[in-house]
Image (cartoon, rainbow over all chains, first blue to last red; front, side, top):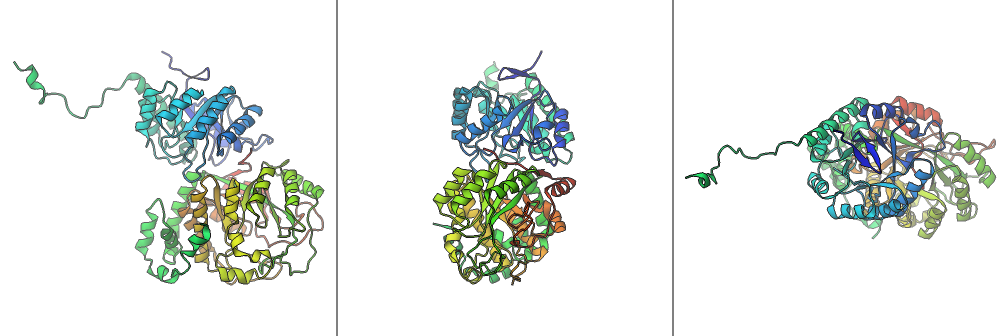
Length: 257
Length: 366
């Protein structure tokens, strides 16, 4: 049975999305992406030097990957929209990961501005993947606004703290009829596996790979973890039991004759 | 309420007694915390903390890689004009120095811009002396328009402006503001800035906040280390950055740690800051303000700059000239201060890559 993730009409086999920031050199990026098996790669438009042949990060992304430019640095919906258009005009395709962050200390997303940007860009033909603080009502609004997927954070970006927001993400997975892609906070492969076991459609990992001692090996580890987690989800793990069920001390009397 | 109100709370603070009371356990306790209070920060600037630089460095390194990655942002300064009406005792542009002054014409600026753009840097910082006659706002705006053809980010380090004027510059394409208080201690400030508009301590102190309110994306503050008591100056600098970060959370706040350098006026700092003291300041700032950018300029020596890379530095200048027309003119003006690291952009990049850091030439475009 094929297990494909469909976003913006495109079928994806691989459910590990990767990023291109924070690497000690851009030349690592190609190997990392190949080793991760990732088909979707996010790049901050602010970092792309469209004029340069040497410094252009896009040159390091393997052919065939779907580029998901992000609006990192945008403080308002209006700035996010402008950045998205710069990316599209420069030939980066029509996928856009919206990041609207007006808090420079914790880098937490501004959900309100994110909804506004999603609405404008979806109407303009973009495949919009908004990064957000997990919140059910916001996710519903994002869906109505035309989002192609929803990308809740697991923990503050770059914090490597794992799925601190797991209960909220669980609700989004249960209630929102869109792919839920856990973005930010995943620090270890085991946490990526956990997100996939919960039913996340995919995970996006950047810092944990880029700042690892051996980023290429870490990319491979995440690739295994995402596949393991997805396989476990599809296999339908047995229910977690808090108590043994061998006897029925409280209701056993019902079957007594 | 402005930053002066925060500063005033420490006006009568007995720094000496506080420092004497700090013990090793206090330093350890602070180092185990994720979020530091003002007094935790001061604890890290204490003599007791100077015995724990390695532990501080390990933590600072982890935090920096976590928040910024293994990257260093590069930029270069461009001097537009060295006319100045101020009398800053430590500066070569001091109005009292009889020297030939000049400013770039727009044609000369275009040449400078082209020359710098060949390095592929996309971030430029423009500087002028303070002279509203020779480098008025209209001149700066014209310069920004020229530079925006070559650079995706233009920042200013010029005389302090009103909020409306900052707004005009933002509309022209400026996105960053750097303005150092030079020295926060008021009596020292008055003594070192005896005449000229810079004598107005409060107008300068509030300039970063006016920049934030006007909508600058990035605002940098700093004290010129060596002018005043370094522990106190570093402390107030950190408080200033924290004040701005808390109040203007959509502005990227950064801190610079410039050490005073010899200048044409032969100024010798009264309170020179040693390398170890500099490192202590850098580490304390990083641990207190984990998300703030930290800039280290070419005032610092090559080897020292290389060595402090992993300790919390996020931004460095490269290919630096502190003279008007320093990139193209044959007859260049005077240097604002003597630089210690003359490496070109490509030399800095090679050094960064060799040390496991990616040089970033472009980090903004709109």
